[in-house]
Amino acid sequence: MNLQRVFGVKQDPTLEQTREETMSKSVCLAVLVALGAATPALAQHGENDSTYSAGSSFSAFRYRPFHVQIEGGPTLAEGALRQDLDDGVNIGLGITWQPFSHLPLALRADGMYQHFHIKPPLLAVAAAALNTPVDWGRTEMWGGDLDAELDTMLSPHIRLYFLAGGGWYDRRDNYFQHALVDGIFCGFYFCFRGPFVASLKIGEASTGLKFEENAGAGFEFALAQGGSFFVDARYMRFDEGGRKQEFIPVRIGLRF
Image (cartoon, rainbow, N blue to C red; front, side):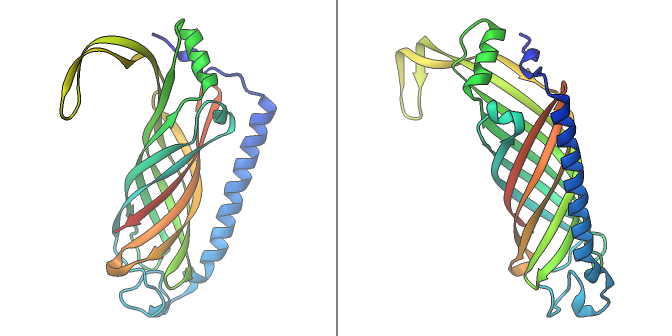
């Protein structure tokens, strides 16, 4: 059952060009600000002035080449997708590699799963494509990113960091229809036989794996035993048939 037309929405070329220019300017501005903030850290040579340290009075962040992070939070649908999807949730797991203790640069790899509920306008489009009523639907996205991370110290226990990079994501829409079913239904403690209302999957549509680009920033707070607590947000997007898929995942997590 082909629902490819669900994603085939015509875009205004002038609007798309404006978005592209705005995104490029925003990323450039973020990089310039980050480099300006990081210049003092790159110029420091004293033991107590390093971005990470093993017991210095300046930084409470303990240096280790590798850190593991777990994260989750809300995801905001942006642009034209706000007409199709409610805001969703995300959960993820990742690893950060910082090869040098004296440089505030790292590589961060994250895998992320996201879940959304589909709004009535997109349900109506799917119903027309499937030629049958659609009662509800959900959108799932999963994939991974590889980002460069630039850290800047705000205080011994707080740092601001910037992220930019790319990855691959797949978006899959699933559509369901309520139906009266006669059969046996079992819960945790009992079973009964008779008619009951069930949700039957009647169709799906997938973008396939698409290259995604992102940029964002966050704050990290040092904890005991070399761990940390962080909050960040990224603007991420990928293209599907000329239509931009735009999201802002907000992630709250722990890094060990």
